[in-house]
Image 1 (cartoon, rainbow, N blue to C red):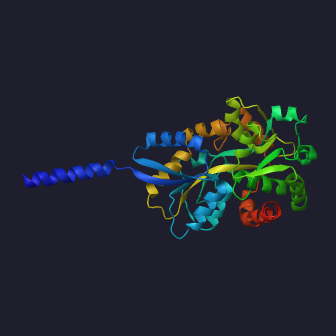
Image 2 (image 1 turned 180 degrees about the vertical axis):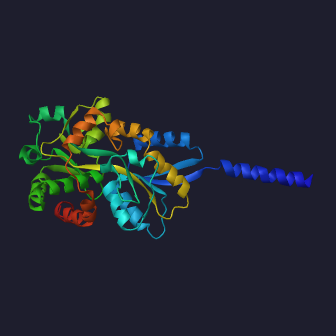
Image 3 (image 1 turned 30 degrees about the vertical axis):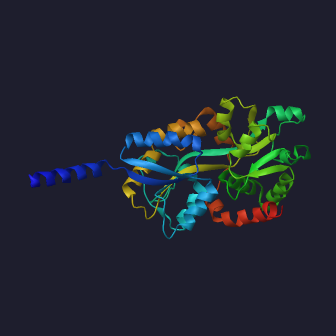
Amino acid sequence: MKRILFISCCMAIASTSSFANTQLAVYTSIENDRLASYKSAFEKINPEIEINWVRDSTGVITAKLLAEKAAPKADVAFGVGASSLLILKKEGLLQSYKPMGYELLSTKMRDNNSNPHWVGMDAWATGLCINKFVMKKHNLPSPKTWQDLTNPIYKGLIAAPNPASSGSGFMNLTAWIQMWGEPKAWAYMDGLNKNIKMYTHSGTKPCSMAAQGEVAIGISSSSFADNLIKRRAPIDVVLPAGGIGWEMEAAAIIKGTQHLQAAQKLLDWVSSDDVAKLGVKFSGITARESFMSAAGKKSYQAMIDNDLAWAAEHRSQLIEQWRQKYELAN
């Protein structure tokens, strides 16, 4: 009888262990209103794995991962800007892995080395969120180019993301430099700065401010505007002529994870149809080109030839230069 009880207890323990969830710590910059969809979709087909999100803006997540380099706390970076993942890769923080479905991803939106360290999910591109009522109230013309935003008639009526904390802010900074060269880009930002009401922590906030009538123009993204427009916010989206900046939401495994197999399953899923279908609802520009929406293709055609490796290499220098000129000087 004792032997039977012992065997029964062992079987019960083994059964409990087999159903115990792997807790996966996932650092992300994806907006909170999208996280539930990703979590439920992944866990539905991987019930043995539970995602625990740690959510913040791209700049904060990047700094956090770098600070934890000696003792990593994250298992996966998910939906973090690709330029930030390039920094983490250079610092040796990423585990190489080629997920299932890798070959189906656009070559523009994956690490094309023989031992890839990250894969893209979807891209977001710059767009101006324009509040129609505020523009009418102040009798303002809708801007058509980047240079239009330096017109004094927009003074105090523009919100823009802070490049030090926002991936969207940093992509604008690097896009302007890549389009015009450093002297012209910094001169442009000098003029734009005179019209800025607020630099925001995140890239979504300027569009929200425009939707709420706090500013006339939010330098943000058409991706962030879609949900607001669906909720009947009085905003239009303008893609400035001459090219727009863009970034990718991308994913990678953090080196040293104690849950490598679970992390690999998450990366396999990132490259799947499921994630492409979720991503197209956000931006329309997915890593799987066949899933792009009509609006996504419009933004895709306006996107500059973005050198993400250059952006990653010069990130610290450019952010510090921006902070000295426009944040610390005020």
